[in-house]
Amino acid sequence: SIGGEPLEVSTELRSLQFAKAVERQQEVEFVKAVDMRHCESADGVQHFTLRQTSYSSAPVDLETPVRQGGCMIRLGVPVLSVAWVHRHIEVLAGRVRGLDVRLLRQPSGDMELDASVQHFQVDHFTDGELPVVLNRRFLHINSRWLGKKAFVIKAKWLASSRLIRSVRLDMVPYWVNLEIGVLIRLWDLAESSFTSWKTETRHSAIPLEPPEQPGSPEDSSVAKGGSVWRLMNLVIRDLRLTVMVRSPDIGVVRDNPTARWILKLPTDMPNMDIELQKIELTDRFGSVQQFTGLLKRKFIRNVKYSALRSVVLSYFATVVKGILNALWWLFRGPFDALTVAKESGSPARHPMWWWLLPMVFGSSEGTYRAMADLLGNCVFFVVLVLNTIRQIVLGTPRKRVQSVLDGLVWGVRGFMLDAFYITSLQQLLMQTKLAYQDWGKMWAVI
Image (tube, rainbow, N blue to C red; front, side, top):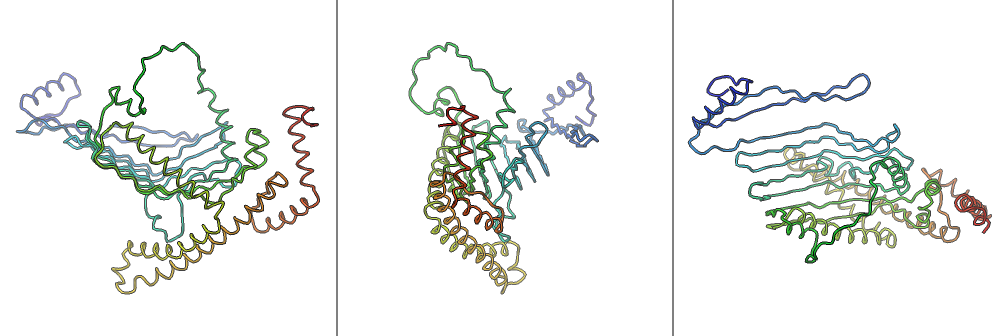
């Protein structure tokens, strides 16, 4: 209402009320509320309905010039799932839990963004050893990362002055499972699913443009009239990513002949730790493309260095890596347990002996993790050496097992087959069949 009178729906009356408010030097403030409702029908179709719940305005007498009104948009989604369906079969799915987005526009024009995700996970539903592609890294039950949100971003900026006051990004450690066989299967399905998106390239004459001064694409965007912003503070906390790489199985290689050379590489790796150090930028000028290009170069340089160091430790110094990780776990277990107990308020309840119980449990957990890490890396080194020798001599990888009993059975069986040259004859027969199917009788005989 304006001046105590109800706001009519008629456009003429609304314009008249606006004119009166301008004559009285009043500020007209609009408040609109929208309610989104969700329901699921009997056939499984999801229905979302937007309904307007209220619409009102109120005048405020001002001696100062008219100010811009504020606005806040908040979006909360308990669970959000996005899936890729191929021929009525779910292939890949991403699941988000605890999505919370808040966008605030203050009367002064300052914008604030606060977005967070409690949990994010990506799963696949193709043939593979592990159905998880991306997930949070759960180290142990007393880990200090369990109570934190998976992804948090906070930003403040002023669009009218092209000023970015602060940007802060925080992310918990994550774990990535890269099974090359799964990636090849997903790539084949993507080529058959998204063929309609491909556009035919037509080679037409392109007019020559005058030469330009050499520079990066980010600098050229500013030269062409791009907006220049001032970044006061940007902080990206340490990012930790653990990557596990698994070589493909023979079934994938039969379906995709171009990937046969991958079997000859020792691609099995239990974990490759990639650590990106904290990045902080203060008082910088440039376009959005320049800022993203700068961050991209920093991330690529750090990823290359961290991945190279992790590959060297995982292949050539596996035992040394196991010893270092074991020593680290002996201190990491008690530290995490004490940190979680302190954050939960144990010192206030037991001022004198609050640290005793977390220290015992943390030492037990750290000792267990240290022994598991040491033995796991030593066993992986032995398996890597034996697999490499088998690959060089016989040209075929070992079969994978799912338990200790399978390992004993397949180990004895594989030793007998290799000792009596049965494996070599099987490989010869398989390569002959593949050559006959791909290139014909002549190459099969050769």
